[in-house]
Image (cartoon, rainbow over all chains, first blue to last red; front, side, top):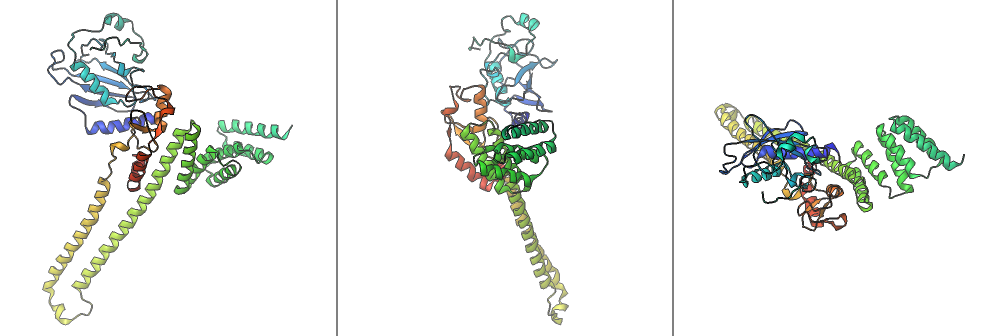
Length: 155
Length: 280
């Protein structure tokens, strides 16, 4: 499949997103079909994320949506990386949905945002993944090339 | 050198020219090869490719037809024939060829399935545009005629031809008659305007018609074991990557797919009234 396949699909997603997005999810920029940014916030009163807004960056390859987009949190002065046992402090997310194995082409930008939103909503642990510091210091791999172990499905 | 070696060499040289972008040179070499061996289908499809590149639609069509005479089941010949007819604006013929090529790709599990699907879509879309343009033109003409007719009636009412001295004097009634006709004309314009905007408002594609992977209007839906339907070419593409049902994540092989004939019929029926949806 070609770039145009990905672009066509993204153009349609953008059209839908511009019409409506679920509460707590906002499009920040979608200047092209390579990279979009969105803001998400947790809707309930979870004390870990109260008053916070988080910036997500989506990067799309030419094989999207057959292959997953690369999704990371971006650290900005007013956009902290949310604290979560599956989110490294450099913004890399460990979520099976975003891996080659867990991804499905019926997923889309909106559904990924909603999954991340609910992943935060359901979290009660004020901690980073084990080995966060070491990982953040040492990792040179792109998120899609990291072999995460999805061992803990309770968070 | 034997005859067979000769045309094969000519063909190879032609392919080299073609790959280098020298379509004229390639076309000449394929022609020489055809003189040596006029019965090889691939020489005709190769020469067609060169001719399509040079916008020689008519002679490309001749080559395709010659190829199909020798070998009626040549997918590429149907595909190129469709392309050439499309360029010439022969949308019915183009669509017929594209659909033949598409069906052959499905049956033979040919990797050109996506390309054939794109051609089918293009043909349907162009054919609809043409129909739609004609319909709009006809309606605009009708609107003009009806309004002109009303205006003539109004003029006749304001200035009766057999100028009776009595009516000429009654200038006072003129404005009332004019106003009455102006109302009628306005109402008529309004009717046409409403019809026009209803036309553009109707342009909404129902979700059941959309493939959930490509987000495009489906053409050849296949249903998985989970009961969900997808565009055949798109789902096969996904299955090359991962042999899992996109929704349930259960194992799914190409052989498990079944055509969804009822949905196909509904899609075709929707397109009759809403041909624009084909490349929504």
